[in-house]
Image 1 (tube, rainbow, N blue to C red):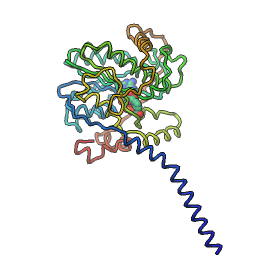
Image 2 (image 1 turned 90 degrees about the vertical axis):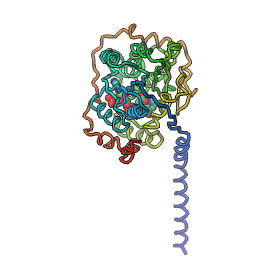
Image 3 (image 1 turned 135 degrees about the horizontal axis):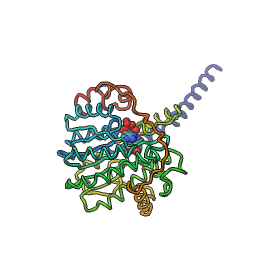
Image 4 (image 1 turned 120 degrees about the vertical axis):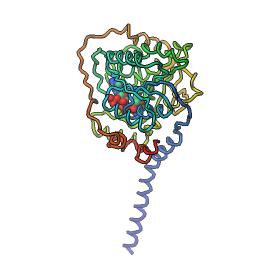
Length: 374
Ligand SMILES: NC(=O)c1ccc[n+]([C@@H]2O[C@H](COP(=O)([O-])OP(=O)(O)OC[C@H]3O[C@@H](n4cnc5c(N)ncnc54)[C@H](OP(=O)(O)O)[C@@H]3O)[C@@H](O)[C@H]2O)c1
């Protein structure tokens, strides 16, 4: 009798524990499926035949898939990358997957104004037209050292250099009947406390806060530019790609923190192609060709922006302080070394299917690659 009672009690206890255990996980799983059900994918059928587009930082992740899709839609793609080795591999992959050979690599290191000026000169001398620039390149949680131009690294890569490129190239873009500029920003701009006073990061030391400030700066710049270029046929918009598990958000020194964040992003985040979908919608959708000064998220226009985005005085102050001709560079020593100029994989197949790419880019599996789709 005692054995039967004990067995029944153990059975009930285990069942209750199992139910508690499952119940504890249900909200997380429901949240995942709720997020996925709200996620929009690239639907537009728009094409860019005969048009030339620059995509910055497109040797990997979201930028790579953006450039690939533009090539598939007939555009001439200028890949503006700092790491020429992996950029050429990415170019070969794009040509192979899209069947479009009109893809070229240009060297651009956004942490150096010298490189920016050379890049602009090369584009002006080699290209007959320019119909769009997608400012995708960006850095996130990086130790915020000074560049050789004496500016905070994250600010120079994410804001000053794109600003300078626009200043130097918008005249050239006016040759096209209509053109567009897209800034890839982030919902992280909501966390920005930027008041226009600390562009040298003397008080703001945390790299995450600096990243948020620069992403707010992207939207403020896009909106101000949109106004200034109103009657020129050039539209300017900003897009939030959403959370994607890329290197950008995983640069913590602490291995455990990196692993936890990586797993969370894998579980809740978007795939890289979904991350590229909003930028591609803005670039490709014919109905959006005349839309300017807007913020896009989840493949549609969104009004979910921080209050600071509407602060016109802040936008003006940022604009004045970003003017390359007005910048005064403090003479601080160069202490930044590119950490990412590392060896890269050797073959096209390695690039598409090897190591990290295979884990995080399952849509590039063999059968799909051979069908030329992702
Ligand atoms: N991932 C997300 O969850 C997320 C969320 C919101 C917004 N975003 C935005 O999306 C954009 C792309 O991010 P991602 O996640 O694809 O990041 P990623 O995987 O780290 O790629 C960043 C790209 O920028 C390039 N880059 C970095 N520093 C550069 C420099 N000094 N000069 C030229 N290119 C440089 C990188 O080139 P190298 O290979 O040479 O480093 C790489 O191609 C960024 O603007 C980011 O702020 C991302």
